[in-house]
Amino acid sequence: VLVVRAEESVESAGAVASFETLFAANYDDLMRYAVRRVGADAAGDVVAEVFLIAWRRRGDYGPDAARLWLFGVAHNVLANEQRAQRRRTDLRQRAQVDLGRASGPDPADLATTAVYVRQVLSTLPWREQEALRLTEWEQLEPAEAATVVGCSPPAFRARLHRARRRLARRLSDSEGQLAGAAATTSSGASRLATGGADEEDPPK
Amino acid sequence: MSTSTRAARRLLRAADPIKSGAERAPQWPNPAARETLRAVMAHTAPTAERPRRRTLATRWLVPAAAAAVVVAVSITIAVVGGGRPDSAPNTAGPGLPVIMPAPQGPSGSRPTLSQGDSTGPTQPQTSQPPTGSAAPTLSNREVTQRAVSSLLADAPVLPGAATVDHAPVAGLKDPLQAPVADNLVQQTRWWTAPGTVDAALQYLKSQGGATGLSVHGGGSLGSSSGEDVEILVLVRGDPAAGDGASSDAYSQLALVLGVTRSATGVAVRVDAQAVVRPARSEAEHIPDGVTSVDIVVTRPPESPVHRVLTGEKVHDLAQVVDELATLPPLATSCPAAARSVQLTFTGADVDIVVEAGPGACGAVTVRSGGEFQPTLAGGPQVYAAVMAALGLSSANDGAIETPSRAPSVSGS
Image (cartoon, rainbow over all chains, first blue to last red; front, side):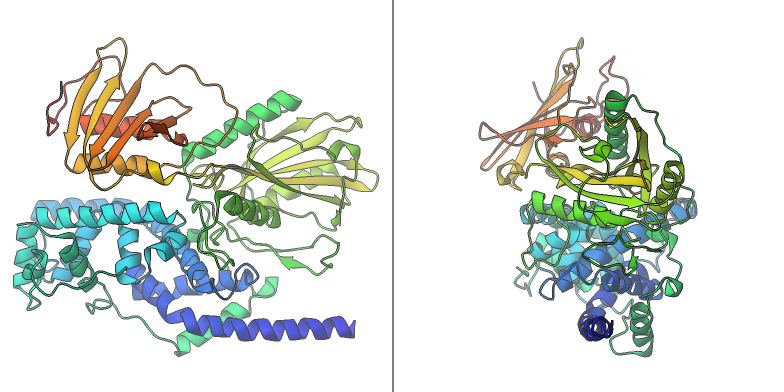
């Protein structure tokens, strides 16, 4: 009995230490991912949920793949969270949208290009939004993002390509509003919107 | 002027809520994070479990797939055993993790924490969930095997149950029911436990609900030993919102429990099973260079409708096709389809023909460069998307309506 307990204790201590390392190494990335999706107020709960699942299933993943495994869990947690929020607030949101249509766009909402681009992003199909967020905001490689969302890399690349084109088209369609929003900032967004100078190499 | 994709990407990066200053993300280490870490690692005993948020309930899969599972399971059980359908609602609360006695066996007899969260990476919403494997991409069979293993691990266990490595009674020797498919993946476990069959079924139903599983059918099966085997079929998720039975990698994921009387109480057979979908081929993904789609809609007795679309609608339709999973290799009997759509995607190095119908079987055939590719599932989605793109009604196929919005290029 003593031998068994000693072995369990050693295993437990090792698990705690490695999990603390895992937590510290991935907390920032997962927190940013969650904050971008649900805001800072709810992000703490989401990240806690992710690590709780990771703690329970700590035998299910290895150290090499832990980061993407955690992102995959976070992806599912956030998807569930958003579905639940949508169900809860659907009626209220519809009322707000109707009110917004009746009174025209709120100038405050168009005060910055970033807000406006996020609004345009939100009009894309959800899967395309997620493809863009994972690659542009979370800086995941397409193959990594494919693992997170659970599809094949070729399928993800096709999805991402279409998402980029669709976003560009939507931004073009509403270029007047974008230019108006950009004019209120000093970021030169209108120049960026037309594909002007300062091009960067796209992430691979 | 138009926004280039590169410029759009740059705008998007600049619109990052954190980089743009709209949101601020706390960084490790901070007191709240330390508290989170401490609380997470304190979750080793049932009394330490905090109530799980209902937002984590498994309500995230396709209702159509749920219906397919119900139909398939019901039909199979009815054929095999003439059993009674049983779709009793879960009586347990949301997916609260619970401690249950582990099966006795080589792994020891310590209690184990059941995986009440189906939000984990083996959720079948993803065809290739992240796993402990170093390889980022898994085959459909590997994904299916992991999903089956995960489901089996989540199977509710009767109090006092002991694992046995073979069928404890003759009636549980053979699989209880399974889809007729070549690509079936199945893992089996047997238990014995004290108690009665009725009490065992009641417990399994309630505990299944507590761990995120839903009752999707049941029945009664006669056996050679003379004792009836009561069958309970559980799947992940909520039948009302969808199911956890299907993904891009597999379909028909289910936990089939058989309970029968034994000399010491009850004997239980648990089969976790799923059908592996064939992998999608690279060739049937529609390249981004597609510029137009030639559509022929056949809806007898009306004359076929022929249109050519360009622009965003082409990419929308291509996306619908690209998002489909392959059709699982199940033995099915489908009526001949009278209504169908044929889409010929063309463009630079693009020669893909897609045919689909609105029928329940939902097969979508794809020819790329004249070569047939693995058949896809989702005919009704493709059919509906085409009808919507053409401004035609798919609800009433008795009459062909005039398109409410003319396609961008006229057809013949």
